[in-house]
Image (tube, helix red, strand yellow):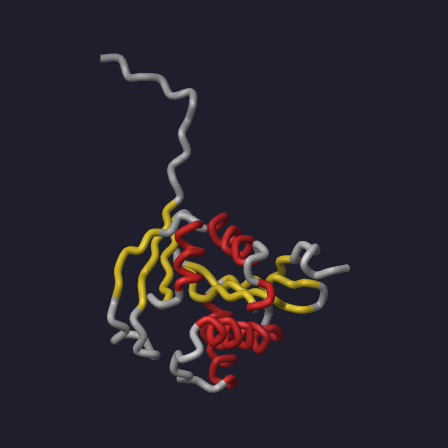
Length: 165
């Protein structure tokens, strides 16, 4: 079956998946921002996923057949990581992963780099608003970034009655 026609399966990732998750991040990020400083080795990135993200976040993957093509790590009203392999971008996989996080949290914040126009457009399409821009002094890459925020709108109850005066 053609991967482009198949719907990805969303799976909970385990320690066995952390190298693949870190690899997806590297491939997707450097394809989008090729001149971004490479501040960690692949082994250090895998350790970050294994030792920091795995114990502190929900980590889901999007699988096409037996291939992991997208990942998201989230919790405590933050998305820590959301990446989809370049060949699978624009097929709804990122939206599917983001939707899983939105189902579990009423409010979400995340950082992305200011010059990552694709990521910024993606988050803005999904209702995120830029809240703060920085010069990058506080991130490892020293790359200007932007904080995005999303909040679930309150549900309107159709049977509300006006108060009697």
